[in-house]
Length: 401
Image (cartoon, rainbow, N blue to C red; front, side):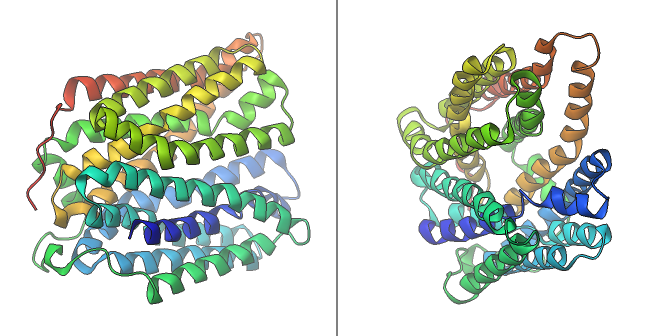
């Protein structure tokens, strides 16, 4: 079942990422090439996707606990396909904005897949299963931009048409070939719980073991956002990287991420346990980001980046611990909370860290200040390791089914 879920999440990542290289260019085409307004609109489009997610992700997760994972997967793939079709046919920026909102309101395939892993994988195999699924997502995100860049050489809108077609294939796969992961015995009744943001987050009140893990998740996502949004600007400003050199860096980073998530994460969890893997991964990621933020030349930036990639063992371990903290009929709500927290950071972090970066590279400051957002990410990772060490119990009792 994990392999089948991995195929879906690969298609999900592929459909979304195929338009990554060309969306800014499409936005620019509506703004007569104005670089400042293009950057602002790209940011607004991201916020237009993330804001609906904050509210809708827990709601969709709760509904998936009641009706199963497949309806949510179908809805999500349909939303992605509709967004990309609107982008392909867009006459102005309003079409792009509408597409992002539609996708944000319906986006839930990844959460449903993660819940499906908890539904079907034995507890002692979940870290390995989550790592495999995350690796499949990484693979889709690696292939998508390469395909999109190639298609865009012929037609700027071809990647959007291709992404819509891939989403349609994903929906067809769910409808015809993918079994329902959630057994009927583990579904919630129509009376409980009531779907909604507050009810979904009630899990944090009723499951004390989940609270520190949610804090670690928040810190982890904030740390990721501190660097993810800055890499292009930082490497160009401090090291003079071209777009080609940065593309090579992203390809290497993503490929290594697949190996870490797909193989190393599961092996680390089996050998060390999820809690120690979580602590080690957070510390490793923090050390890597510290080295990247302090590196005066690119040759020293690369080793730091490789160390930070090893910290990706955090995510499968964290997903496993969180899934074990709730019951079998609460996995959808849990993944809704996870998606909501991630979406919240996608709204707040880009605004905070881009402003901090703009201040750091201001007139008269040393180029060394450019790494300040990476150093913030290192501090956030270290805080995540501390919370895991101090507050996550060594042995976590499984939640009642």
